[in-house]
Amino acid sequence: MKHINILMVDDHPIIIEGYQNVLMSTKDDDQTLLIDTANNCDTAQIMINRAAKNTPYDVCFFDISLPPSEDGSFTSGEDLALLAKNVMPESKIIILTMFNESFRVHNIIKEINPDGFLIKSDLTSMELADAFQQILRSPPYYSSTVNNFIKKTIRNQIYVDDVNRKILHLLSQGIKTKSLSDYIPLSTSAIEKRKKQLKLLFSIKDGKDETLLIEAKEKGYL
Image (cartoon, rainbow, N blue to C red; front, side, top):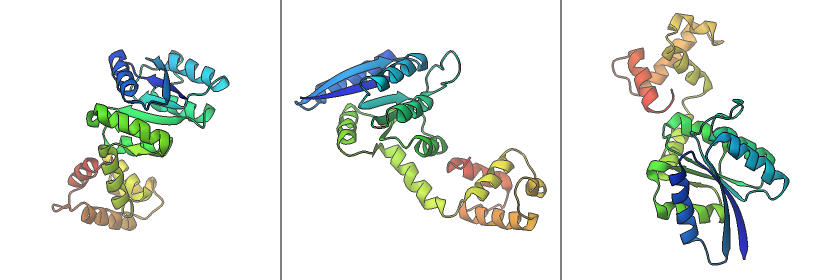
C-alpha cells in the first residue's frame, strides 16, 4: 500500500472538499491518501514547516489568492509554494488558480516551475483526477489554458526580448519616447527602430503608440 501525504491550501473550504472527494473516489487501489488542509497562509506555513521536520508532504496544492499571514511575510499561494520547494524539495507542487492572464501565468512558471498548473475555469473532476495521477508518475501537468500561453510565449519570445518589454512597460507608464533613453542604455534612434519593429510584430496599422500598447496588453506583454 502506497501512502501519499497531501496538503491542500484554499480559502474556500467547499473547494477543498470537492478536491478531496474527487481524489478519494478516483485513487488507485494501492494508494492511501492522507490529506491535510489549510485555509490561510498562517496555518499553511505552520503545517509546511512542521511536515518538513517530520514527514514531508508528497504533494502540495496551492490556490494563489489567499488571506495573507498576520506578519505580512506570506501574501499568496506563490509565497507558500516557494517555501514548500525550499524546505521540502522532493514535494510535488500543484498550483490551482482563477488567474488566467498570460503575464501572471508566465510569472508563476518562471518563479515556481510547478509540477502541476491548473486554471480553475478549465477544471473538471476527470481532469483533476488525471492530473493528480500524472503528476505522481511523470510531471509536469499543465491545463489547456496554461499550455496555450506557453506556446504563445515561446512563439513570440524570439522577438520580444527584455529591452523591448522594458520599452513597452515604460510607454505604458506614460514615459515619452524622447525620455526613454534616460531609462534604457540606447540612443533615441535605436529605441525608435525597436518601436517600429514592435509595431510590425503586433501588426499596428495606424502607427500609434496607444494601439501598440493595447495589442501588447492583449498578448500578455503588459
